[in-house]
Length: 250
Image (cartoon, rainbow, N blue to C red; front, side):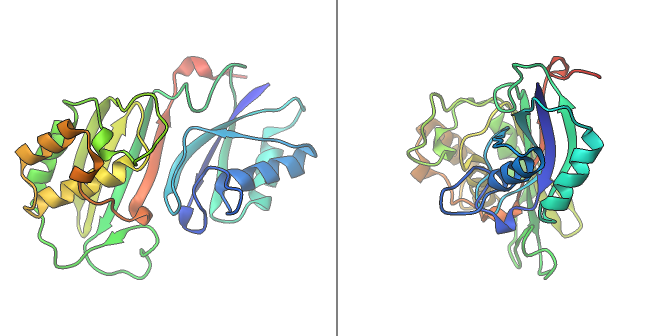
């Protein structure tokens, strides 16, 4: 039987979600914890990959389990085995062909900037001081993202994908006291895409890039024309959505 596991993690200590042969990952630790509990080799498949240092407020992974078990007991055991910066919230029964990656209909990210210095936020925000930004211009450019579909200019080079097309449904900057947070949602994202988008929008906010230049950057499909990628620690995967038909109510 197939299940979805809902979890969150602080990515500071991990080389991303995806298994790495020579570095510790979230997927590896979840596999080991499940394998320990069920006393057999278990491999989970995630809704996507997050890069080294990137966090997830909500991530899903699917797993096939032939064992009868009590969900509450397995949740307790998982969270006892896993380190404190990885937490499993739910185990949900799904249809047997449900796929954590391919059945996702929407993903949302946040990029969190703290405008100042705070020692307690160094691992979960990018901290900027004395940088004047035109937020209105940044939001004007963010709205333009919704009118395009090909985002090759924001993709990591040499990425093995069949298409660079993404349907962005929301992109907006929100100011909250000293926090400046970029929200973006789409049906899919390319590798490094959000961090490259944020880096380019910040250049618009600084007056280094115009709105017309931003359109030309997107249309160029050339990564070297876009802005630099912002640091990983400010990026959060915040939500993954699926059709209701994927889940089975028991």
